[in-house]
Image (cartoon, rainbow, N blue to C red; front, top):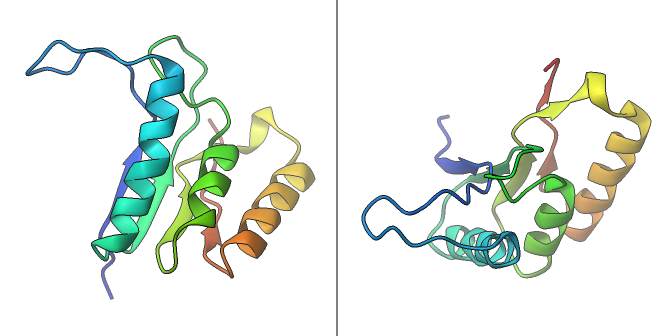
Length: 114
């Protein structure tokens, strides 16, 4: 069955229509609220990717997903994508196992090679 969801890297580039920009702090808080809203409206999955550049707010998606897990009930929470070549795979597993515990079994890892 097809799933409908959202994925993001937490972009902080100016909003095209308004030119408004957000700090990394603001953008991360927005992402947690977006996860909660996506759950309320019935989306199936919310994925957050990892980037280490100035124009992206999320360098640790597992922490943002853990924050989103606390106040959601149904939505799956996933990395989009975890780069295995740049991290300890055991630690990655343990981090997502913790999110899985917080979310009552809704965490997933999408792994890539970078």
